[in-house]
Image 1 (tube, rainbow, N blue to C red):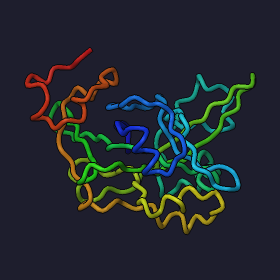
Image 2 (image 1 turned 60 degrees about the vertical axis):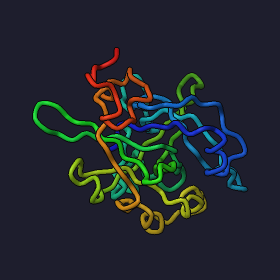
Image 3 (image 1 turned 90 degrees about the vertical axis):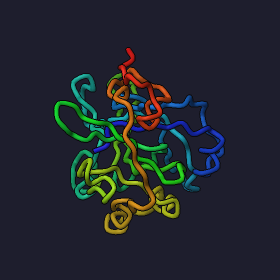
Image 4 (image 1 turned 135 degrees about the vertical axis):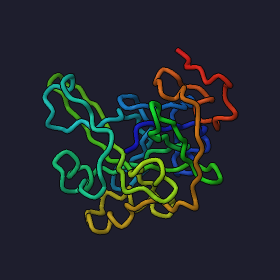
Length: 233
């Protein structure tokens, strides 16, 4: 499961890391939630040029007749994505990378759930594995949407949750984005839990529980945030 993440990287850094010729102006976001716009990187054309796109987080199947009655699918299980009708075509033809500083997960305990932030040890950006679709409406509407692939948790996440988003290693960016690669068997070799020793985690304030809170305090370690941990509305 991956239900929230953060992206505060500057456009210049994004362009360098993901080899982009242009990146739209984006403001730092500390609490990205389902149903919101996210930055996605896709490969297009015969030259496989990488392009940044703004997509709706929550994949809308192309056969959907009324998007008002559909809740977009924010996650896709990597083990079965190539078999499920909603994801099968996108898995083969429309893969993407979703840049992030890190992601959140909640640990159950008593009457409250404690949020944790997961990121790389050196705080470098990560690229979440995604699938995207283009929905065409009856009145010439076009909406691009995406879902994040998940897998079994690594040992770092195990005490918190049994699933985690798939993080693509930088050496495999080209392969994941290559639309000429149709082999599900080859693609699935990239879809595994990210090495726990390359990641770190810490508890954060419960202000992240509300999607209305999009603040730097969301990603700070709990002992660095407000002492009263009061929700901000």
